[in-house]
Length: 402
Image 1 (cartoon, one colour):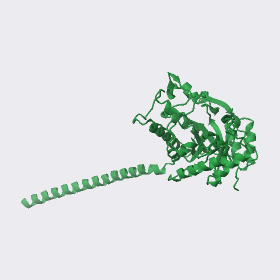
Image 2 (tube, rainbow, N blue to C red):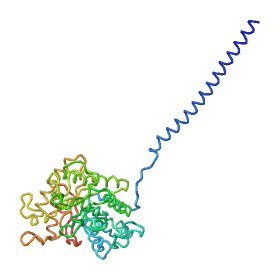
Image 3 (cartoon, rainbow, N blue to C red):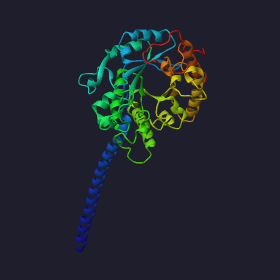
Image 4 (cartoon, rainbow, N blue to C red):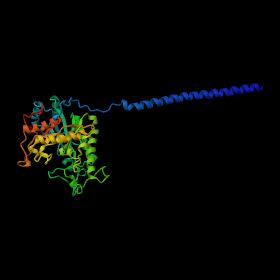
């Protein structure tokens, strides 16, 4: 009887153990299944960024960067949409020129074309370029490389509409001696306003966005203490020069990042003398820092715009010498950068009569070719011609070393 009880007891214990093992086994399998699902979900989650396609805008046009470099002319919105355009197109088609820099946001702050009526920029637009699609198609058909010029911080239109984004003097929008108002480079709202217009230009089909007037007003250091303006996120520190430099540099870097998905190059126009000094204190331009954040740097090196420099007393009379000496300095500055941008200076195709008798010369074929030759001899093969009225000298050899 005792043995029988022991046997029964052992069977019960054995059964309990088996049951426990079975339950544990079921729980283990259940846990494995659950863990497997979690691991699979986690693996899928981690793989998503690799599977996602980065946004890349495609305008549908087939513009190609010129193999031997950009050689272009400045074109106002009025010219781009008017009768002068055919003359400019013929100039490009019959010479070694291959590009146009076209105003999309002009020196006053207006868009040069009409966006859709619901656009927040409709009221600051002018109908200079009546058909942007036709314009881009014509440029494509003629292999003209398209560059959109966006004037940034010189903007009388925005300053008048939004004085809080400008500089005030006695409660009124401050204007320079030419009656031009500027908006505030410290304010990110101003950055985004201009970059949004640049994106629209990229969507039109332009292959490069050229930002001009990327600076504070000339002589700002003399007005810094009297003008009223905000500094946005640049409150820290007492060095006002470095604040201005940082704001301008940050805008350029931010603009390039914001446009990175649009398959466009970013270029900036800059005063030529900025390359010859560590930084321009009043306007906030540091040549090296800006150059580090762009694909193309376009110094405005018109001989007429220099005071006695490089040992040249009257620079406008010596286009070859002035351009050559500038190019040497720029090459040295850009050569010190890890990834220097393309150098594409603005050169002079106009006559600076305002300099007064004896201080200027009439610019024509010889003077334009002299500037190009000086650049080419220093290894700079790209350039842009400036003439505010878009009337360019005929008969120029734009590749004088060939």
